[in-house]
Image 1 (cartoon, rainbow, N blue to C red):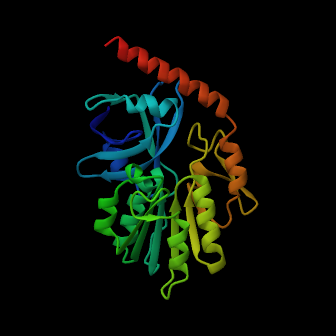
Image 2: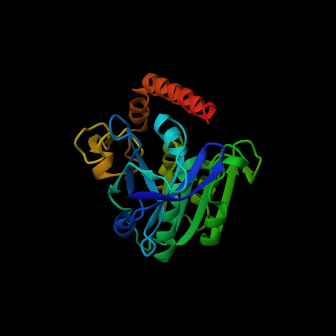
Image 3: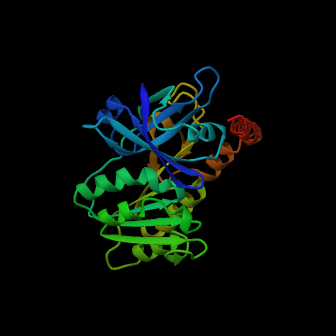
Length: 283
């Protein structure tokens, strides 16, 4: 039983769940993810990166944004309830070593999966700079946790309501042009953000890793729904990723594929919201 040990509302549409999952907590490594299913009969299977874990206490943390029907239903779960299905850990772990100077760039909800990677890079002896970006102050995630760990923390917001008024690419470019440029950059966030983060580091020859969250069904390489083009080769994100060389990913193709089922996703979200409101009215 994957019982929810705690539930925290981090913002209007971002939720953190701590879930009992001793075997997953023991086996997981930074960068890996789980597949969650809230309806075992007909429900969608969604990938969520493990944001934190404790093997001695036997739990993992999932931080997610309510963007579709499944995450809306997942957000309705309360402490003490159990998730119907939780599979993992899946995917390839992040390659971690002492590179020298590491920069972690997290955009929006991407800060959550970045957290264990930043932890591992710091523990390996890297000088760690972290850039957090969000649309506004309310959407900034894990600032205190990152500040406690990073050698340097830069926070930017689109509207200037907190930190610098800038996109994450601006301080990233400044670091690349500094006297001590990064030896590696890890960027996680919306596809467009990762695309332009990779384009920012490309002229400087800085190795840049991105973590992709493409459409998945089974999470084991069987369906092919998560395929992306990397260096003119087809890769399956669920088994060969989720991390790839950002300079080799065909982001334009990936973004088009992410829109393939948008009409169906919109209908499912609308129906889910109707169901949730109806349930609330009957309480």
